[in-house]
Length: 259
Image 1 (tube, one colour):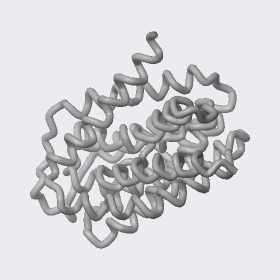
Image 2: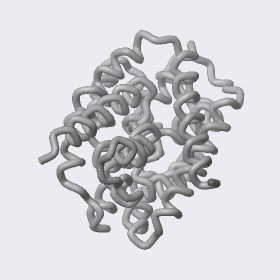
Image 3: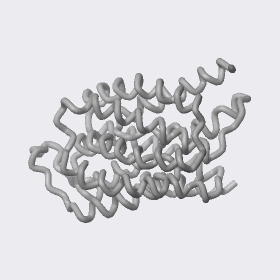
Image 4: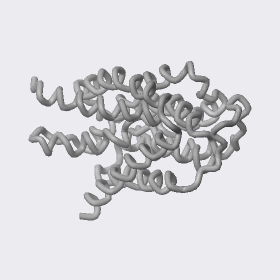
């Protein structure tokens, strides 16, 4: 067994999950390009887009579970929001996860790039949510939330991302959800979504056991640490961290696709 390869995967999983816990994403926005580009750049065998998306799906399941448990005592997880969006996103993510077996690697990469580009644009649109409101009285458009979650589930299931990096911007910009509620609730919604995408990927036959286990170990350690850091940061700081990560990924992915 190549221990250098194992250590590299642990490092990728730890960094991605630490950030995911901080900004309420499953970590795929970071780990998808890291898994795709870093191993071959350091002389290790490259993963295919199908394999990366499958590893990401498993990792997201455990990263969001750990992050969600860390957030549960803060009172920021809105149960109604999680129920409405979680119900449709898990169906969509299963369909996307299983359906990805019929898609080419290039199509999966382009799907990821389009998702990330949309998320990047939305992060810079004005947010109108009241950050100091009573979170127990939060109101939102439930039919719109359910519809958007279903669409997000399908496309994110294709890339094994569970959709958190697009779900958070959608919550902030379209549904007008306060930042901390969006981040905490998105972890719960993404956890539900990852159940569908992981099951779909497993049925599609693209799972890699050892890399998945390594990423899971890193996730369960790092995600709760990121969630604790998040509670001490300003909401605007969290928004800018997420925006910067999305923009950097968008630039890299699209440069590779176009060149």
